[in-house]
Image (tube, rainbow, N blue to C red):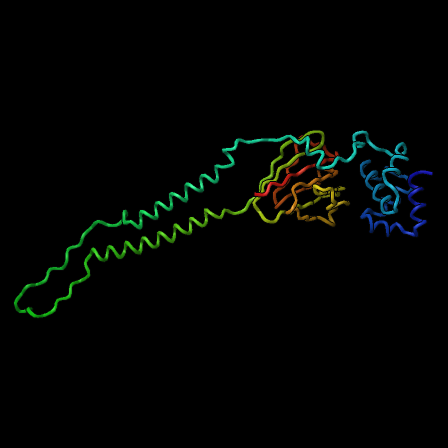
Length: 299
């Protein structure tokens, strides 16, 4: 009995149709039928044969690993695809570290502090009158004629008083503008940056530095890709065929420290975090299965 007949027999014992299995596994019925008929040549690739059979077996309550081991000589697996799925935590130990000089991490903070100190000094100088006008106005002379004796004479406001009043208003306006600038400097807009730290043997390591509260992983495809997404604890966040019908797919990863992604057909998939594309290495070849480990560094 072949593996396809074994799966079909188990499905019929459970009184399940291919359509019911399709709804549970998200695998198209034509691929499920091809597995039962052992027509593996209609699959997109040997990677999909293994992934689909495992998912099919899990739905039927069969131990997928034992089933794959029993029929391993009957399946068209490529040698490079026989590497077992490594966990995120164990792989993280071999991740190369890229250190940058400590001074560069403090430069933005130093610049902001210096700007704030300069603004405070400038405001203090304005308040002390260092930028006021030194022009003194002469009081209007009073006619000392006897005919005007006994009458009260009103003097016009001196030029010095007017100048002082204008200086106070100008200083107040400048202070308001400086306070607005201070607030803008103290509250920079949140941003996200992504760097590719290393790529080797179809494995990519990324670091995502972000100051945004919400972090969204978006998966999009122009064709179809089998995609697996897990958090640092191995919990599945996405495990199915990504097609144009369910694209784009958004996954919130705000509270996670690490994310693991495995995907096929890299030439037709687009992965982004907070609208910034995850740049794939130029060494990646088309139609090869890729693995990516993403470390989130929230500021």
